[in-house]
Image (cartoon, rainbow, N blue to C red; front, side, top):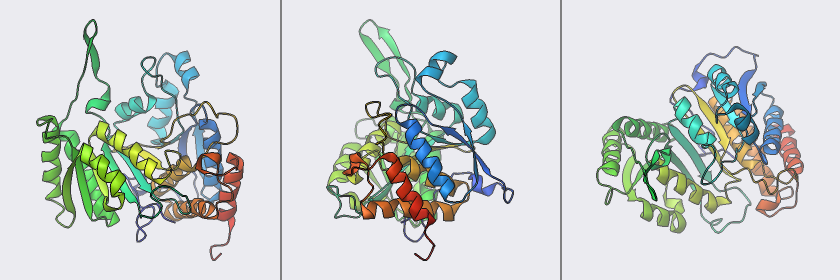
Length: 366
């Protein structure tokens, strides 16, 4: 099964895709691998095995990034990480835990700012055979979230004892950029509707600017239906009529919340893929946490990172391999014999991965 629309499977690309850059024939793709911590190394190893089973040659530049390395280097992004990403420009990243209410800054947030990864892409689609409350409807939506500003960007300071202030910054430049990316994607993928999410009824200046930018870009794409939803109404629509939604275009914080809500419709964060995209760099990642409670037990679900790897392969121009990987994952879910405990099975991470690889090794006509 493809990632998105049946007529154009796995076709998710960057504003400036690596696929457009000449890649020498028979040379391996070079990709930074950041396993992360908790269950990260387990799902990363499973994903590397699955990618290699597609037959695509990838040279992995493995970089450790976790609480230990952050403490040792005194910064959330050690030079080893930045140097590798600066050289190779594309990465596959497992989860890295973030302290709550203190400690170091989110690694994801730091990467987005440093590499200007302005678009967060989250496809959300039913998995075949996986029973959820919405198994009887077709959910096939994509969230395009502005990634660099708004309230989620972490601009906070203490005004006085017992008083703090968080700044919500919205700019014309960033709003136009994410809107253009979402509409270009919709046109490329044959999507028919883009819905801007806002709270401009209350936040008239900040969200109002975001909406004006979305409307301006929408006029350049007359074949695509454009509409708007207040964020609280959007949340209600997601849990009552998710099949009616297509491409959601959101500021930073709203997109963070709604993308997790949407993942819950199809089986949870362990299922869905994600990517942080910029003009020159791309980081494909697991969107779930590092789950330290099950780390080392061999039962982590690698589906989310495997599906993110399919997005990565498409980005590298390896569309056929991406489709094969997605198909193999979906076949394993359809059979329901080797699913991990979080989705109702009893299989181990290795069992699930072995099953995916067996499907990848089947003849094309099978």
